[in-house]
Length: 206
Image (tube, rainbow, N blue to C red; front, side):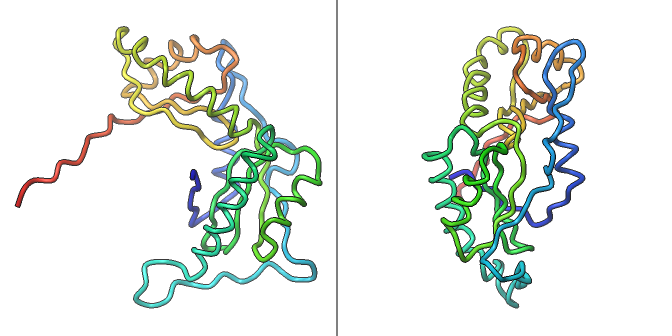
C-alpha cells in the first residue's frame, strides 16, 4: 500500500510542488491548485481536532500510528475501488494525529463518505490535480520507455509520482535533459529533477 508518513506538513512546500509540476512545452505553464487547496477537515461531530500525543519515552514510534495506518488502509482500498476517478492518495500526519487524503474536488458527498469510513479519525482533505490511477498510468508509460532513453544516453534513475500532481523523473543532469524528456510526452504533467542512480546495498560475509 502506498501510504506516506508526514512528520511536518506546511502549506508552502505543498504549493511549491504544485508550481513545479507544469505541463511540458514551450511555455511550461505550471499547474495551479484549485480553490481550497489547503484542505478541509472532517472529524466526529461536536469534537475538536484532537491534540496529538507524543512518542512515549524509549519508543521509536507514535502511540497512535497503528490506528492511523489501519484507517489509511481502509481509505486507500475504498478510494481505489469506489472513487478511482478522483482519489489521489493518503498520507499519515503523525504530529497532528490525522490522515491527509488527496482527491480531485468533486461531489462533497465523496468527502463525507470517506470520513464515514473512519469515524474515529480526523481527516484533512487536500485538492489534487490528477487521480492516483491516472498518474500511475502515466508513470507506467515512462517506465516502459527506459530502453528508449538508455540507447540515447539518458538514464532514468527513478520514476515516481508526486501524489495528485505529476510524474517525477530523476536523472543525473536535469538541466541538460529536461527539455528532451518532456518533449516526448506532450500534455503529460512531468517534473524532471536530480536523482542519483540507486546503489544496491551489499552485505559482506562476517
